[in-house]
Length: 270
Image 1 (tube, helix red, strand yellow):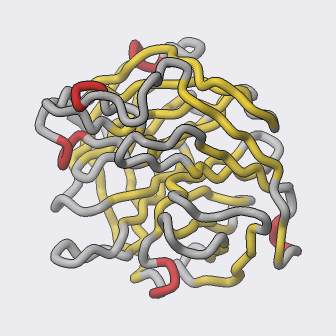
Image 2 (cartoon, helix red, strand yellow):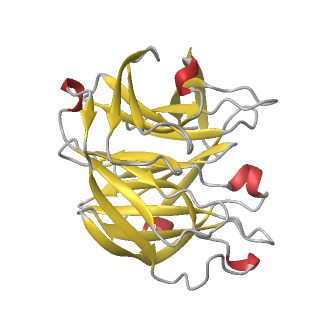
C-alpha cells in the first residue's frame, strides 16, 4: 500500500456542498457540479475552492449527475448516469463546448446510452451492477466504471466503453475491476480520473484511492494497482489529477460524516 498526504484546501460554499464531479480546467480552475435533484449547472472554482462563476446547462435535467471528465480538446463531459435502483433504461452524457469561461449558458451535445447486457430493469439482486458514478475519457472513448450494488456484495466494478461522440450508443462491456472485499462502504467506486501523460487511472472510493499504472490499451484491470488509505470514511465523490503525483478530491456534505470540502492529495511511494 502506498502513502498519501491529504490536505484540506477549503470548506466549499454551501452552493456546492453536494459536489459529485471534478475536473482540473486550463491549469487554473476546478469545475464541479452537485448531485442529482439540483439545478442543471456547473460551478467554476479557483484553486482556493471559491466559486468564481456559475454556468447554466440548458436543455438538460440533473436527474442524477455523478461525474465529470474532459478530453484532449478541453471539452467537458457530464455523466448523468446515476442509477441506484438499476431501473434506468436510458442514461445520458452531456458534452460541453470549449472555452466555457466566457459563457453564462451553454447548450450541450448529448449522448444517450444503454448497457448492452442489461435485460431487466431492475435485474435480480445478484446482478445489480448498472449504477455508475465514475467515468473518464481516453483516446476518443469514454469508459464507465459501475458501482457495485449486488447482494451479496461482490466488489465488481464493470467497465463499459462507448464512443465519445453525439448519438445513441450501446455501452460495451469490456472487463471488470475488483478492488477490495470489505463491503460497499469501503469498496464502492464513486469517481475516476485518467492522466494521459503518466498513463495512470485513479479510482476513488469512500475510504481509499486506487491508482492503476502500466496500462496497455484499455486493459485497465491488468495494470499495476496501488491503494492509498484515506483518513476516516467519508462520502468522497470526486477526484481529478493535477499532475502525476497530485490530485484534487472533494467530499459531499453528509449528516454525521461531515464533508463538503476540497482537498489536495499527494501520492508518495514507500
